[in-house]
Amino acid sequence: MMSFWGHLENLRWALMRVAGVLLVFMIVCFCCMPYLFEHFVLAPTTSHFPLYRWLSRLGEISSFFPDFSDDSYSVEIININVASQFMTHISTSFWFALVLAFPYLVFEIWHFVQPALFVNERRSVGFAFFFGTIMFFLGCFVGYFLVFPFTFRFLTEYQLSSMITNQISLNSYMSNFLLMIFVMGIVFELPLLAWLLSKLGLLTRATLRKYRRYAVVVLVVLAAIITPSGDPFTLMVVFLPLYLLYELSIRFVQEEKPEADDEEEKEEN
Image 1 (cartoon, rainbow, N blue to C red):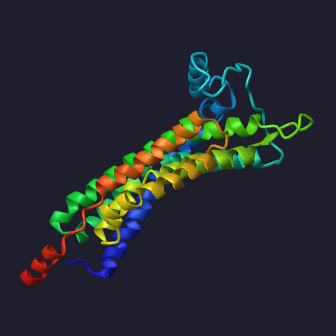
Image 2 (cartoon, rainbow, N blue to C red; image 1 turned 60 degrees about the horizontal axis):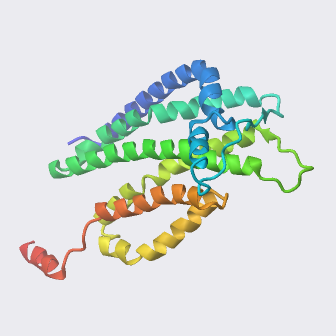
Image 3 (tube, rainbow, N blue to C red; image 1 turned 120 degrees about the vertical axis):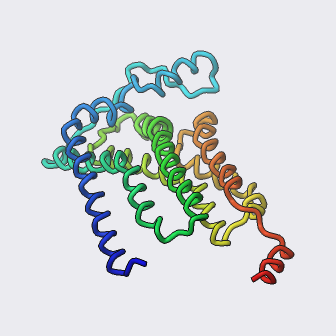
């Protein structure tokens, strides 16, 4: 059995390996950032973004879909601080590197905790790590291609007065861009969180089913806050993934054991 200092040494080497991989990815992202920034980060600022073009075609079919037919849509991002572009270059490289290195980070965490698990626990915990990684990337995908473009376009086209001109600063754009995407990545970990709480005996499938109607109301309000455009299509696009996450959480949560089964287990012990 490994001593406490042995585990601490393993943790130190794991952190060093993660830092090394993160540094390598950060250097690569730093070199590629001008291209990534122009074709990926700033893509939602023009009408050429795939979601806008797709909705523009749908808008020709039915008025139910939001109006994205303005092909001249473009938002100019300005810089008002001397060092903002350089600092943004570095910080964005770090966040891109963190996303790319996320699977390796999960692998190192799994490799560190694996010796402390029983054989029958390793399969379920290993699946949890794998599933959590997939859901994180799926959440970032939804955040980039759906949530952020809808929110950004509505806010940039909203006018309190025609005498006011919107000038979006680089810092403001990047803070909203990163926040929306990473928040959605974290939100998509809801089924994994529900599974962990059920393993600890803090959550049951019956509880989630009982409060499903309340959850729907909360999710609708949350979707309305995330996308304040007001049209039903945009609200539905954001609400549906959140609701599906809730239903998926119900599938992952364990059923509550009957009291008779608990008594039998106690007798056996």
